[in-house]
Image 1 (spheres, helix red, strand yellow):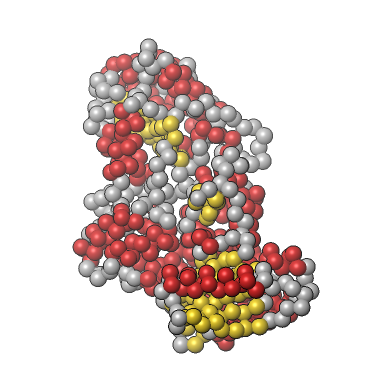
Image 2 (cartoon, one colour):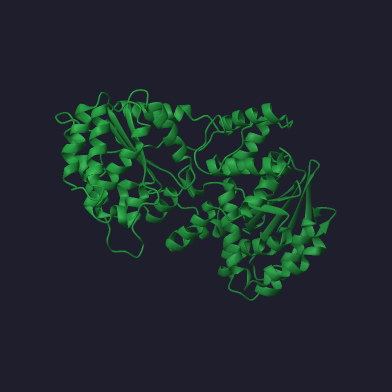
Length: 520
């Protein structure tokens, strides 16, 4: 029986996976044209699975050496001659699966590696003519694929290898060389200075400007997720609505391959229901577990503090910068797939990453947050028969906010008010519910928070008070939003910084729906 997989390569006969044939076909066409290609995506974005199935497909018409630089370091890349030996040794090990390699190719690679195995060194200058001879005497064109290329990109020896391949590429009409070289990793190999440690002055300019960047969206489409779920349903007969489930998974993950597979895996393993409540249960576990993706994200936030600052401002302050890939911190965050370009604006790439970041940033402030402490104390007052008394939560928050921050600078409050509500609500729903911010409506003046609690959604609009007419528009927007979510009740939290304003709560009704508004 097949299962969902989140570690290593996915195989269709063993795992439930989205069909990636169109992706493979597109890269194959580029190879046929003799293009050199870079594939850069964030951690666990399906690169290794894509490269494996690409190599399998290319085996029909090419001699394929699919290599990986994973777990290679100073010993392998420390000198030019060490790199030359280890690169050819990698090729030697892949001869067993290089189906179309003839005797000349096989014997040449084996001999040079065996002759130099004692010192594990080969003169780097030897590679130039050796590559030419291999390509000239091969029955079919040779393609070299290198995964986890990040491991090498800090080393000058690897830069020299790229220069050699580039020089041979430029004269390939006169002298035989590889049909295609495909480099895959997280970092953009054409901009190596991003890979070098942030505190390092030693930065390279990559010679790899001959390569075509693979820009096709590698996120999993909703139709593809539905097809995968239909295959699961044929085996398990869970009774799920595959179209609805696929759309909900997309809403949370935006098609990020690891998150798609992981939430499905959790639902299957934990025997959750294949519906909205089961998905929310899986997401709760995912957000709390320790995994390689969140470990790496934590490290990147430490390595790039300015990127962290930008993400925090986007989440808490409504900061909405234009998406400009030449702005360093946007470029870095986009390279890791933490952000996306949505209509020319920077948005956090999916709801799971966004919620995890909210939780992390909130946790950093919990120790010193009196509002978090108040939420922890008040929690039992707001839960009644598995539902939240949201109107009471808002009213109590308004009271605490005024008591604690009433004398603070108004500019400070306007910038931070919504963040404080998140700190207050977090211990109330922690362990049972999730919250996320609706990216399509977030800006400096309003934020829509959705709280999922035991299958019920609570829709809260948070905005800055800009006058009575502006407030009425906000109410109408929230009524429209209720229609979108098929909800009868919503909540409006208005932060008013007029000196004479007082906390108040009121209910507005319209066509059988109602909004509870609390002014802070």
